[in-house]
Image (cartoon, rainbow, N blue to C red):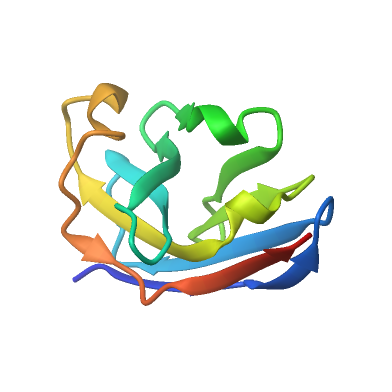
Length: 126
């Protein structure tokens, strides 16, 4: 059974940085999409960044390209999201999600994810 636990959220001012981590247990195969989602009240949840563990292919939402970096620490079995130059519009609840797939990285931004963490709040003030 896959279990995901996020940490690292908090409150920062515009231009600040945060690093989110997702401790993943049960992710024992190499063919997983690991993804960070963001949700703001009243809006649909959106994909922020994904990584396909089989080949490390990444995908980023257009709004975070050049500011956010997704990475995976295989030794610690964690998924990280380094967020720099944060903006107020980055505010939201951030969720880590995972899905096993052999269909390749193409699926990662489009999949219906079965495994979710509890979320961690990120607040960026002007």
